[in-house]
Length: 342
Image (cartoon, rainbow, N blue to C red; front, side):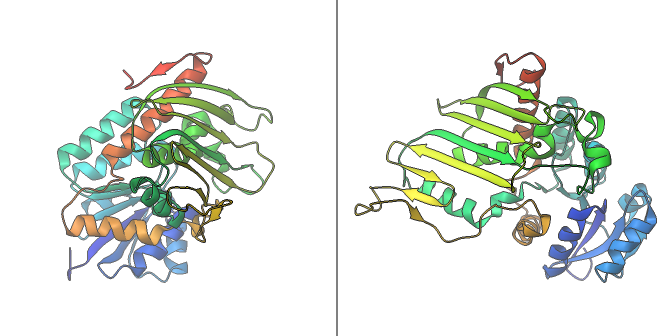
C-alpha cells in the first residue's frame, strides 16, 4: 500500500473489467497500478480507454511479483479463475474474483483452503447482493415483515447467443464455460442462499438444450430443500427469447414478496393490493447496470478494517457447491443430491 492507497491489478480485460475499472477509479483509497491479459494489446486498450497510467502486461507472474499490487481483480474466462486466485492468495494478495470462481469441487476446495491459509480478504462478484432491491428485501426479511419464510424462488432468464455475447468462444464450451448454473445461474443460487439465510441440504434438477448452442444443457430447473425445512426452486434459461429477467418470489407465514412488491397485513393493515417499492431492480444483464461501486467499496473497507466480507470466498464456496450439486443431479438423471458434496 503506497501513499495510503491499495494498489489494484486488473487481470482479464473482458467487458466486465471495464465496469470494475470504472468503480475502482471512484474509490479514494485505491489506485489501479496494473492491467494485464493474455494479449498485451487488449490490456493496453482497457488502460487507454479508461485513462489509466499504470503497468500494462501479458505476464500474470509479473503481476504477482509487483510489490505495489495489494489486490488482484480476476476477471478473465471462467476456467482460469481458480488457478489465478490460488496463485494470488499464495503471494498474499487480496482478491476480487468474478463468478464463477471455480468449475469443479476440487477447485472449490483448493481455492477455499488457499485463501484461508493466506489470511487474505476476498469478495466474489455476486454483485446483486448490493442491488437496492436486494437490500430492501433483506431488510424486510430481517424485520419479520412476512413472518417465517417457507418458500423461495429465484430465476435467471437470460437469452445468450453468439450474435452478441463477447465471451461466446469460451462460455459455450463445457471445459471453459462450465455449465448454465456456473456461467449465469449462480447469481440466482446465491440470491436463494442470501435471502433465505439458510443452507441448502438437497437438490433435484432437470435440464434440456432446445437450441443446441451450448455444449452443456442451456436450460435448467432445480428444486431445493434447505436445512431448516424451507423449500425452493431456481431456474436458468439461456435459450429464453425475451428481455432479461431475474424473478424473485419469497413466501412467508405472514406475507409475500414478489420482486419489488410487498404483501404484508402485519406492516400494512390497510393494504388492499400489492405495495410497490420504488427502487433499482436487477432487470438487466448489462454489467454496467450492476452495483460494482458498492461491491468494491465494501471490499476496500474490509481490507482497511481487517474484517471478513459476507461475500468472501468461504461463503461463495457454498454457492458454487449448490451449483455443482445441481449439475450432478442433472448428470445422474434427476436424482436427489445431498449436500455437502463429497
